[in-house]
Amino acid sequence: KTVEEAIEKAMEETGIDKEKLRFIVLNDGLGDKPAKVRIFLKLEELDLIEETIKKFFNFLGTTVEIDVIPRGNKYYVNLTPRAGYDKILIGRGGRTLEQFNYLLSLLIKRRNPQVNIILDIGRYKERKKRFLINKAIAVAKRVKEMGKEMRFDPLPEEDLRIVREALRKEKGIRYYTTGKGENRVLVIAPK
Image 1 (cartoon, rainbow, N blue to C red):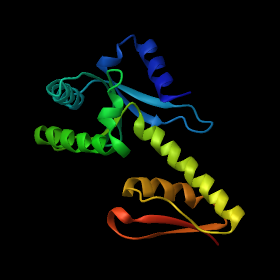
Image 2 (image 1 turned 135 degrees about the vertical axis):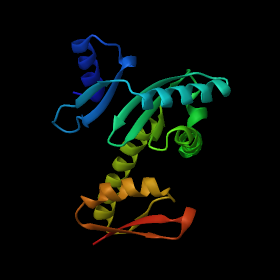
Image 3 (image 1 turned 30 degrees about the vertical axis):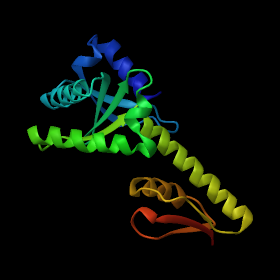
């Protein structure tokens, strides 16, 4: 069962609209464990996040559907823009998305310093994470088969962290980084 299914079940059981509820994800539902969520009525923080994001995107001349899911001390905010706008708002390699995340975080923290958001558009970050994990495992498999080291293209620090985490479970390989800053490259080599 996915997080979305758990949320829908909670809405059915309570009879309260999704817009009036706050969700905390207890279990993402990965593997064989079902997703679990805890529900609350919306709080001031959620209203602040939604209001700020709506005003920001109205100023840009577009509208977005906002889905806020609290996870620990952060709020995971997924935006669904009008059709065709997602690629523009995400930008090449997610750079525009990261800038939106930075700007919206500043605007929100100005009114409430306790609120931390992680912005996503059309679940781009989730798709990218799955892609990076699959690519890392495929490259590691190829390194084992060929017995030669292989290099990833330069990756941002957040992406490097995802790839390293995926490779940590792989046996028969080692990995390290070379270069600095934007030219930092991950190398996967046989043991």
